[in-house]
Length: 225
Image (tube, rainbow, N blue to C red; front, side, top):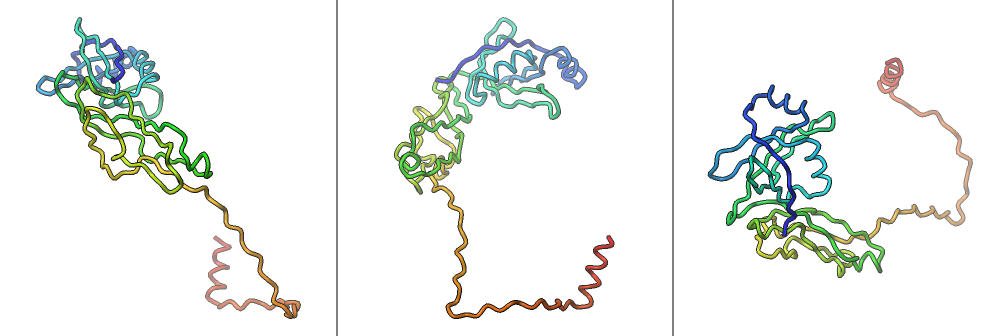
């Protein structure tokens, strides 16, 4: 079952840039709440409260219970716009969660166990895919998806098709690799050049390198640049 958290919200009327800036200066974040078949509502949430909330949840799979005008509205966070140069939020999109209506969302994939190829073969476990998209009813949203990698040996991998999520349809390509165990990299050492038996090593006499006139002029010009 997905984690459910609470967050206070209030309706807002001004939707111009000046109104949004005024909200941010007052410690709030402009946001919208939309749902299928309903008019999108303009709301505002506390910037500090929202920041603290994000420290303890997985936004893509957590249900936020908004306290709005005396009502409780369950929603998912769909998009967070952050300030590019300093801490803070510019805008947040929420999607209302309606009973009986399936949702499309991403849930994180967590690897469990110690792979055989890591434990006994010195391999390295690489998690290639960290989340998958699913379609699911609100009551069946998983907080995360676990994948056991205990039996993985070097060269073997697990794919999206190996995931099991009760009461949900996985939309991500089943052929995609989730995790693989690879062999550790070995640095190549250059083999010593064997001396030719009976060969006489003579002192090399340095000879001047012959450079074509055009090349010599190009190099001289390059030094002056």
